[in-house]
Amino acid sequence: MVSASAPCKAASAMKIVAYYRVSTARQGHSGLGLDAQREYVRLAAQQSGWTVIAAFEDHESGAIAPERRAACKAALARCKADGATLVVAKLDRLSRDVEHIAGLLKLVDFKVATMPNADKFQLHLYAALAEQEREFISRRTRDALASLKARADAGDALAQGKIDRRSAGRSVAHRLGNATAVRAAQLKADMYAEDLRSAVKAALFDGVKSLPQLAVWLEQHGHKTVRGSTYTPTAASRLMHRLGLAFR
Image 1 (spheres, rainbow, N blue to C red):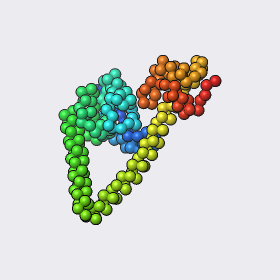
Image 2 (cartoon, rainbow, N blue to C red; image 1 turned 90 degrees about the horizontal axis):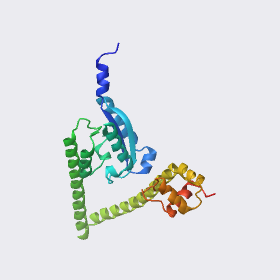
Image 3 (tube, rainbow, N blue to C red; image 1 turned 45 degrees about the horizontal axis):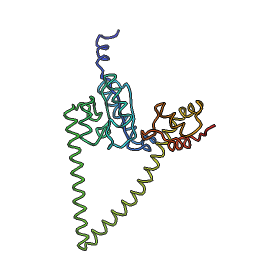
Image 4 (spheres, helix red, strand yellow; image 1 turned 30 degrees about the horizontal axis):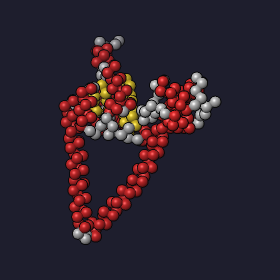
């Protein structure tokens, strides 16, 4: 026998759209950080009785406004279409910028899995406090470095040694970071090109025989480059090269 309360409970379950974000395509491809985000959302949904109706995933920097990220934009549209609530694992997966958070609060209802009972005012306050803390840490770091340089200029060998080690470490990190960024960009472009393989084959089937014609065909069929720009013959050439395709 089904209890009378069961249908009411199912009807009252809040519909949620999960949104996950990692900073680089390489992180997303490896799953780094995504599994933890999914687990946070799963546990919060289980404990709060939420129903996950969709999930979206971005491989973008948190410095980009949420509504300008492709997957986040799609998640917001899904929330609006289904009257659902956006859910993220942690607030910084949406943004670390309090202005971004404030703007989103006007567009959509959202919850944070690590603090599921927080209301809009509390989320705004938390974002403001987190930004203030980051600014304080940054200022304290700049002041400490300025003091260290002053001591080094005054002849303090120990301070000069710390500065030299810091400079060497940053140089290595910069080189490694640039290499990682290049690999991530290449991977993102390769994955995006692969998504367009069927479209390019359709263009070739339609009789497209040159790069200018391909660029026009892609534009007419609503396709953009990985950066969201209109295809040019040069961009079309790169796409053909990535896919290993040639005109007949």
